[in-house]
Length: 399
Image 1 (cartoon, helix red, strand yellow):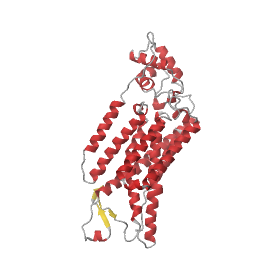
Image 2 (image 1 turned 60 degrees about the vertical axis):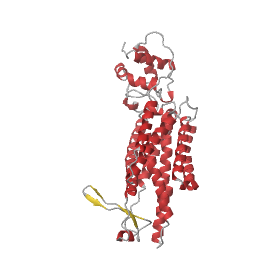
Image 3 (image 1 turned 90 degrees about the vertical axis):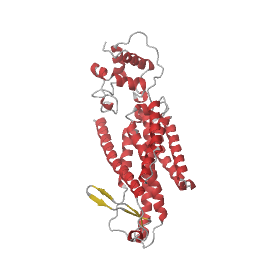
């Protein structure tokens, strides 16, 4: 019952996380597009005299819209002022709660891989939490340093540091946990940008106007910088969110480099759209992104690690015994492994028919990527993997 409740809670948190993430990323995409698409009003026009720096006419859903952006602020505050913040806060809160439920409460199986590093549960969770906090502190320090005014150089340094983080976590956790903690570190940076920089700056501008003064434009400039950074972070984070479905990435021997290449492709593609919204068409950026994705596709093709030699023909009974001992505790209609309420990915292997039906999936996960069992908690031996491989290569016969 407890395992089912945790599984249900995980499902609800994941649903909320996706909904909030769509709202947050959607607003990020929209406002960066809007900012890049604004046209300055004619000099001397009433609009320009009001302090409007740019405006846009658009049609959507059967109506016409005319959003305007002021160079600093309007002459007076409107009665209703919408704040874009809860999309970010809800995304981070639900994502962090999901991290706790799925990874931290199951650290022994979901984070710790003895073949990577011998950690205690406390050490694993502590490193995971520290990676989020330290990433924000380092990033924020860089933005507030003289490097903050050098956009391209700052971006390169931040990307290099995120790659270094991926490298370090890949040598600390199992592949899935390493990926997701890089994602939570980036997500923490993004929400902290909103909580500590963007919203406080906007509040100071509003307070200055309410006091009858003129807002300091530096707050708008800082907020714009962090908002643009968040925009470039979105696609790498989205990839990390779906990567746990694709073991060829996180189970790769150089998974940190695979993640860096995917992130570079995502940033390049995002940059193309941001430039395109300014009216600049530069195909080199999507070309670079496509090339990087193609490189990842080639690099992550399966390459079998050396396996012990298996003497004689392998029988189905041999394979069934291995799977029954090493896999069925999780992959059955009623799992008996602690903390597992449902068979992962819905794959059951408890009957001969189910095993035959999923022979290729077993081969991929147990032999090719070796990602299963997670952290090798049931201690599958290389010889047992070799037996499974020989059986599948011989046609996965039932006798």
